[in-house]
Image 1 (cartoon, rainbow, N blue to C red):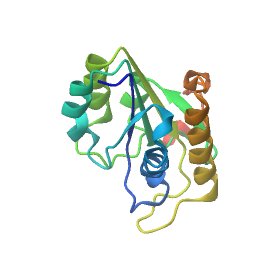
Image 2 (tube, one colour):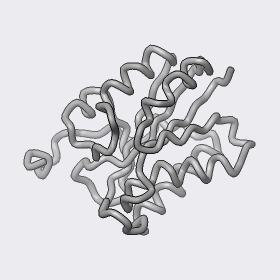
Image 3 (cartoon, rainbow, N blue to C red):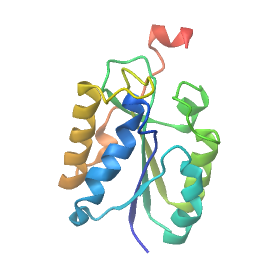
Length: 162
């Protein structure tokens, strides 16, 4: 059993959608973090059985999320935010399903979205998103309170067109 699970989501072939997998790679390279790291890739729901078996207290999910913010912005997202369908959808099942299942498996589920700039196939991660991933990595290493990231606010005017 483990206390803390990091579940990352994204496609390494789609530019900034690779933010999650990059964080997983960085975290997996440093076993002293105290986190069990699972790279869920494009089908994070495939990892539900493993997460249930681990029975963690906390699950943190990290994914690219088109929120209408500046590239690299990190926000806490709730199920209601995710239900608005503004997330990049490379996943086989809706993210709301995944989050609901995770909430049954863990006491606390925290979803952190990183605003992408470019999710074009075969493009590299943009500098702003790479910096955001590095910031997250440093906060995981330091044991910082990840709930300190601001919550996403739907008041952004450009969200109406998404």
